[in-house]
Length: 301
Image (cartoon, rainbow, N blue to C red; front, side, top):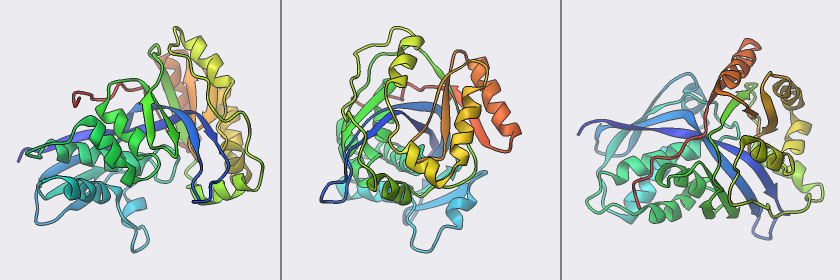
C-alpha cells in the first residue's frame, strides 16, 4: 500500500455568533469559516492489525502526554468510517504542526483528514455529503472541517450546533496570519464565562452571496463578532494584547480571535505583509504562520 497524506487545514472563524445554551447543553452557532493552506499533516503509512497513530512534529507532546483515556480524533474518525462501510485497518501518521486546544480545529480536522484518506481505500467509498454527515461524530466542528476537504470552496458556513454546513460566499483570494501565545484555552471554561452573561444580538449572520473585493470582506467582518472572544480574554488577557499587536502590523486590515482561542488571526492586504506579521509574532515567542485561505481538495461529489 503506497503512503498517502493530506494537510488538515487550520480552521479560522471569520465570524462566530453563539446563542444561549439549550436544554441539551449545546449552543447554537452561526459561523463563517475559512481554512488555511497550513495545518497538521495526516498520512496512511500501511496496513495494520488495528487502527493506530504514530505522532511526531513540534506539538506532538501535547498529544503523546495527554491524560490517560484521551481519544485521538484520528482514531475516532477511522472507527466512525469502519462502522459505516468496509475499510482496511491501517497505521496512521500525524505530523503535529499546529498547537493543540487553540481554537483552529486541529484535532477535528485531523479526524476528518483520516476519514478522507481511509475512504479512498474503501471498496465502496462514501460520497462527500455522506462523509460530512458522518463527521458529526467528531464533534461540533466535524462537518465543517470535513467540508473543507471534500467540497471545493474558499469559505463555508455552519449553523445549528455545527451540523448544518453550506457553501459560503464567493471571495477574492486572501491571506491570513495566525498567532498563538502558547496557552491552551479550555473551551468548557470559555463557554462557562459566556453563559454567565446574556448572549449578544443579533444572532443570525447576514452573509451576501459574493464579496467582490477584499475590502468588502473586511468591512463585513468588522460588522460581525466572535462571541467567545470576550470570555476568552477574561480568562487570558494576553489575547487582547495579541489582538492589539496584530492590528498594528503593517498591512493588517482586521484582526480577531478564532474559535474559543487562544489563536488570533489577521486579514492582510498581501501575502508579503501576512508573512511579515507572522514573523513578528514569532520574534515575540508566539507560534505563528501565514497562508492563503484554501479551496479544499474537492473531487468527491
